[in-house]
Image 1 (tube, rainbow, N blue to C red):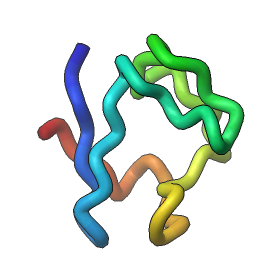
Image 2: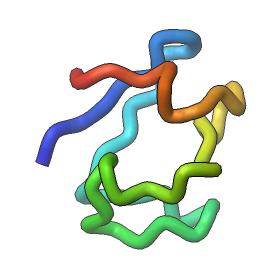
Image 3: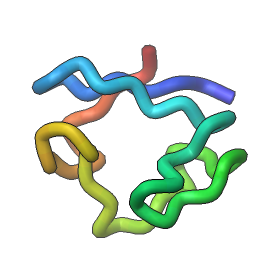
Image 4: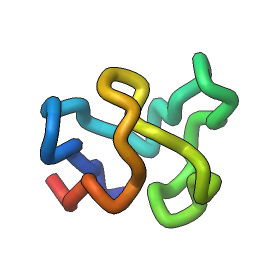
Length: 52
């Protein structure tokens, strides 16, 4: 699975790890994240991420 990086702060979303602190299970693809999911570091939306 492709990792995605936040263009604002550099946070890397790794689908293998998910975002368990925010209710996203490991194995969740970036495309399958909820529409209201935001970067856990800087709180921008999914539209500010690009493939790593």
